[in-house]
Structures are given as C-alpha cells and as structure tokens.
Length: 110
Image: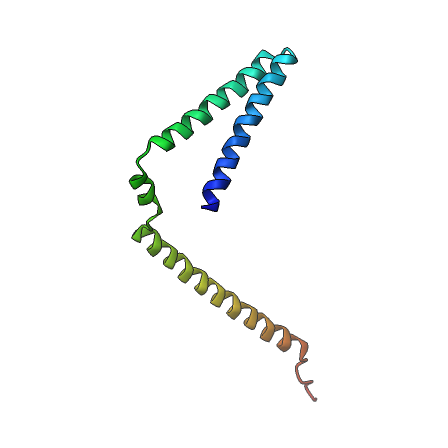
C-alpha cells in the first residue's frame, strides 16, 4: 500500500518536473530543451498507461517467486559461505606464519 503511494508520488513528481521544465525551456527560448521534456513526459505517461492496462493478474504473477531464482540465491549464499571459510583459513594461516617468523630459530652452538 505504501509502495503504491510512493510510486504514484514519484510519477506525479515526474510529470510536474517535466511540465515545469518544458514551460521554463520554452520561456528561455530553448526549443530542443523543451522537446526533451515533452518527449520524457509522453514516454512517462505512455509507460504509466501501459502499466495500468496490464491485467492485475499478470502484475501479481510478477510478485510470485521463481523457483529458479530461489535456487540461484541459495547457490550464491553457499558460495559466499565457502569464500568466507577460505578467507578465514587464509587469515589463520597468515597469523601462524607471522607468529612463526617472529620466533627466531635456535642458535647453533659450535
């Protein structure tokens, strides 16, 4: 519900900015600048209209998780865990190596 309101607020701001930008560009004598705002306005309104014409059932289908996407997420999580384990082993190995280097070898007696 809040998400829908935020999208509508964003769309309204988009329209107002482009309307204001086009009017300002016309007032400043910049036809190309005004044309860009007009094209953006038309594209935005067209996209909103196309979204509204899309049956709500199709929009709901987009919200259902895809099993392949979930599998991919699990795979990425597993790889991240393994990379973290490798990193931890590397840090431990470096720590042991640094401690070994600090300890001087025993002096040879002649």
